[in-house]
Image (cartoon, rainbow, N blue to C red; front, side, top):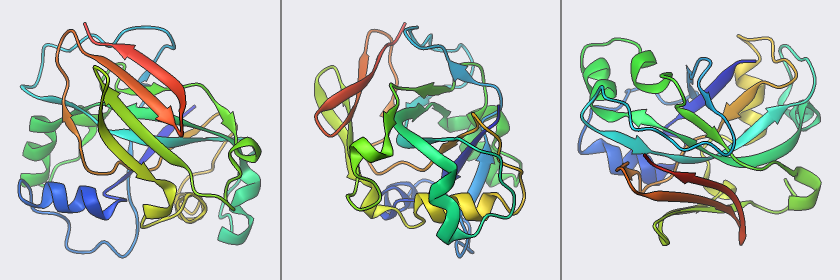
Length: 208
């Protein structure tokens, strides 16, 4: 199983990060990166790592690939996934900013152990997707810190699948994190992170 992710897929997050980093000049195509073998096992807490000075949460819709595909046309991409959930792309922000400034890959900041949390899966039919947009939110200690909808994506789920399949053969079980909106913030010991799709809680992670 591989985990792929999209960077800066929500205008609000691009605006949020623009003050702290120089964004890529060409964003005509999705920015794709790997999160390695970094899934946090369901039901487990997230243990704050002892590297980096600032670990941040990024709540994102996640799709699970359900069939093998290569060079998938966008109009057929909906056939390659059946389930969607909310996940958290944990990011070592200071390491990422250093990598961007030095023109290096983001791997150390994005693909460390347990950096990809995935919630309870929901069928896209139950969600009514793609006919209906998918609302989602993240709460930290009960307060909403991130809130958005799939309709706000610059590159839709189907567009992302079509794009990445030009370079990677997508296989059953592969995960794609589809980008985060504004509101990312620092992860601290003692916090409780809760992810929602609509009013349904699909993810609960204590930080230790």
